Length: 114
Image (cartoon, rainbow, N blue to C red; front, side):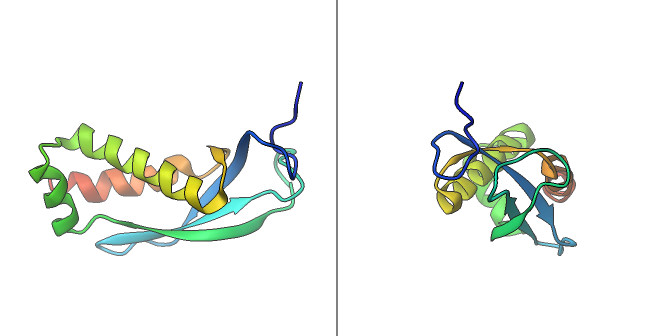
């Protein structure tokens, strides 16, 4: 069995998402990975990048114009976040913390427009 989270190995990287306090129209989310591999809570961490998730009225209206209802918008944000983080860390990833906190913010802010 291959450990897919050791430096230099291919596979799924484990990350954490840490949202900053949200603004009305966006939230910055730090992407944290584990350079020595994830060994549970207390593993050495480093910030790889920050991603800005935008959910201003205009952004949500663009999704609505594409025919997306609230559930469709949530699927869009899930796919978008996965793709953007994957691009920045150059690997498939699995979140080991913070995902629900980030999506609670997105659900609340986007839900205001539905």
